[in-house]
Image (cartoon, rainbow, N blue to C red):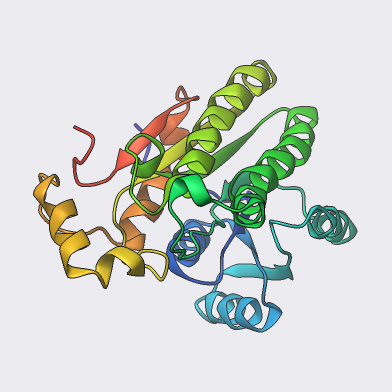
Length: 255
């Protein structure tokens, strides 16, 4: 195993939801390992700040605002990438939502369903299709989808979110199967409870958190940096023979 097996020198990485949390940790680590990172999320101001901080540490970073739940934003993102000659070698579909709601699953509104599915499933699918096609034409690339243990373990009050991430797992496998012959590897990370804003619904609920810790062999929450290290493995040559994998970073919850 060579010393630079985790190097991303010469690679361009697009990270959605890249201004904070897991996405930001991934962007920081990828930049440290030589990648030119493109941060994407809804708010340009937050992106500009994050990109500036990465550049201040010697990294290469760009900021392009786009809402992953809006197809017109995804098309505009693709146009901006092309206009700036940013050929994406690595795509991390990290942007996702889990909006709080009081309805039981049987009372789910179409508006809530569409909102969650558009960001968590439809957006990553069509962005992966567009970027994956470009990767295939250039002879290779790597895509990582940020999923969750909730895709395999139903969570009360999060039913639609669970369904959306279960779909994302299958999107991972389908693209891995289709793009593999063209040199594109597609994998996913199944996250447990991670200390992020999205994790607040669990972290700020003592009973919910206690219930999760009961089934967690490591008896602790995870951190964005731990997900980032796994993402680095999956996009680097260290995992050159891995595709279609749903890799758990959950403290052993699904063991």
